[in-house]
Length: 400
Ligand code: NAD
Ligand code: MG
Image (cartoon, rainbow, N blue to C red; front, side):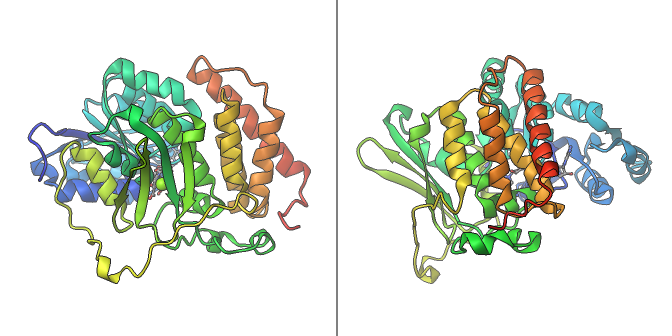
């Protein structure tokens, strides 16, 4: 079956120059491009030539760079095209406010929160790649979606898999969901080996090609930690209903276990375009030129229990979910800070989890958030505390 006539027509891609953004535009092109869709706004940050080329190719109404300093470059690159140009936080807000009925949220990190929330609040369908929206502001974000009447369509491959496995079934029959994790490049590494790994080895994911943050997060399992929190909000589950299993081949994208013992799984080659396409065409399916799964060439599918000693991120996610309140937002902010310090060579790989745990423990009393500003304030404190630990212990290298 191909796309239904009533599918969204006017689209915005927040973060169009990133890994998910480029794949999204490829899916849009495959499903009809300008003959089928109108592109309202495209946003990027540093890669102005790519953003300008995308805006021209898809005839966007508005192109936005998040970097104010690059406004003139983008303006020059799009001179004479009639495409409006904006920059900075106000530019992102303009993109979010643009009349699009479907918005891909693919800005990396907490920076994606404000524009995605704004698009949700005006009732757009949100294709959600940016898991930080739910990790930092789960209740607020779900409330914005519900009160404005848009749909929340998961793009993270695991959550798309679960969404697909839930189709047609009663939610109250769901006993558990099982998120698969490849185990990343250090699946079989000892803690001693992990202590001295470089950014280059940490970013080399065995199966998926992704942006830097999500690649490092796959190696440390913080990506899976964020996904556990994301799943809890998306599917309205209790923390004990969210399980993680290591599956090195990344063929089973995730599973749903039902109260009669049945387990539904969604399979495919690891290619984000399938999940993106489902979020665009739901409840129909688009015909995509992606590699098909050849079962005769799959020699085996392996599953292992995760090791929370070598990968403390999973334990920390569970703690954050159990403590509730702002602990997930604190986990996320501390992890983002620690990630930047690791990429900058200031701390070792294992120190990331140590810093997150210290910040979470120190901020257990953070009260529940009423607004996005409350969340930002608590996140700011978590970042400051993480930075203080990083600076105070310059000798912390993660080696033990
Ligand atoms: P990426 O780093 O490749 O791209 C990020 C995009 O956001 C780019 O367009 C960049 O210009 C923009 N951006 C970066 N910083 C910004 C800022 N401060 N303000 C505004 N825009 C900014 O990231 P990605 O891998 O495409 O991931 C995007 C989101 O999707 C993340 O939240 C990630 O967790 C999630 N996700 C990614 C994958 C994947 O396969 N890449 C899979 C699942 C979920
Ligand atoms: Mg994922």
